[in-house]
Image: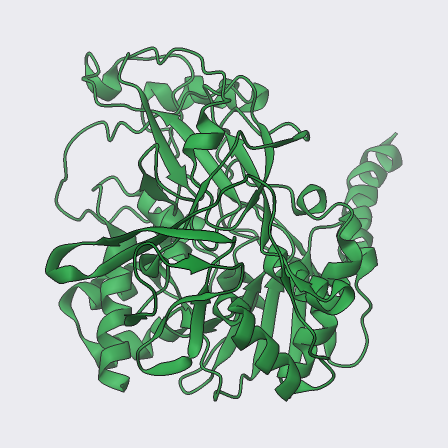
Length: 480
């Protein structure tokens, strides 16, 4: 009897050891948080309802100084330049469709906010590409001419990649772990050959490695061959496992002076399509999701599509508080709030719809409202949310549940921040603008989205992502 009692726990520990040994090549992200938000998009794709307007927005690109190349009323083709980077005119931003420039939107001090192109029909447009992409220079040339070069982002700072830079490595994440995120296996269904070809072409742009990260069992992984300088990784764990910053930190962290490039999976497929089909076709399959969306699903659109054509087809449950809905280009943690007649962001594959939460809660956090999520479980609502998490029915809206408070140190940041960085100390260094301290604490490794979960669990309601972006801009301007 004693032997039996001893053998059971011994077997358990042996099993755990063998399991870890077998999965030793898997990058395990242990710190993080998956939000149990309902309303994930069903794997069904529809064509958006008669979208006629598309926009390219300079505000989507960090540090961009745009020079306008068109005027209202000009006729443009798919791939025609709309504006360029003033400091490097080789970097052009092109129209995703053929049509007429309907509006040049400007803001304060005449800052260029968007160039809107209106098309005469709702069909997808393409640009024929004759050039062969055989080496780094020819690939770079085609990407610059079509405007696809702007899909390459450079770290540190998150700017559009410099054509003259020599990246140490290139990173591609083939999955997204954010709340309600689009399933890349589904988005790229039928385009696996384009994705594989895009990876092959990207690998020629660096003398280092091209790192591609997948989830365990992801179908897209089988399309990519691990040869040459292409290295595949399997990443497990909660969000932010799918963030490119988390993957870079786990694979090969950025040191001061290093330059790495990143690219979205759907943009990689667009690059591969140029080589396979001889045409530039900036298409997107985007997920439209949210707790109140009855027909949450995927839509086939072109880059920069106006969301009103998508929203028109949504079936919405009534907001319990009666305050309407908020539309977010991107995910709920790091996305950008947009108007109902605005446009999908340049790097986004998700349109999130949340109930507006501009209302007062009776008794605030003291009231044990069923289904309210609480990370710390300090309050009664945290225990009721535990049950809701299992069935995926936690209620989420945009309510802040109180005003801005003094910056309180709770230790919560370290529980959701997986990088080998002290997040609280780095945030404090960013607030005071101490450049030397920021560098010592790893500022060059991060982007604002890496702190999105810290912002979510912060009881002080601090705009942490804004603070980090301002600090990065300070450093970028110092380096110019």
